[in-house]
Amino acid sequence: MAGPRQKPVYAFIDSQNLNLAIHSLGWKLDFSQLHIYLKDKFKVKKAFLFIGYIKENQNLYEYLKQSGYHLIFKPTITHKIKGKEETKGNVDAELVLHSMIQFPFYSGAIIISGDGDFHCLIEYLQQKNKLERLIVPNQYKYSALLRRFSDKITFLNPLKKRLLASKTRRGGH
Image (tube, rainbow, N blue to C red; front, side, top):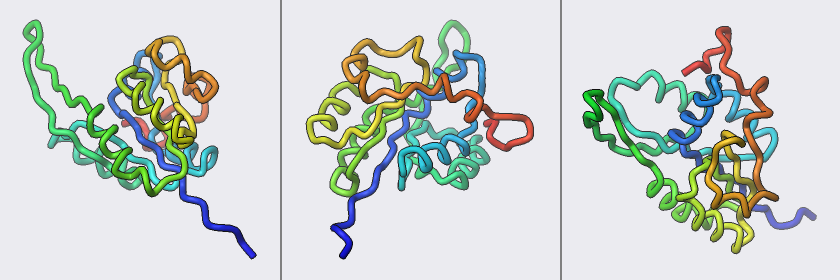
């Protein structure tokens, strides 16, 4: 007789932190390959991608949905900094809120970010034995607040070959 069914693993992804960190390393992430990696390596059933909403990015959003992500949008604001327009869509609050809304439905959470603003969430998940992994995009530049979770950290840098957006794949968004 089979034992009780275990709740699934969910991933909560800070897309801005992920994207900026990978770009700072000089390469582009194939989001489709990342989703496959999360499913294969960590048995992720749902991957929530938190992203600022920009009307002109509909093709990107469709690609991400087709790749298997559940998109959670944050309204963005545009302002000028030193004469240059900059769009901001900080998703931190949404990621924390949705990880708590979903809390009863998963047995383990994967947080993808190198941002120390998630320290309290990661600490709480660890105390509740629900921190599956902390995936940090750039091992050379991430918050010192996250270093105390080093036994749970996986870095994306070594996975560049697997996750690199190539010209032959559609992942170069």
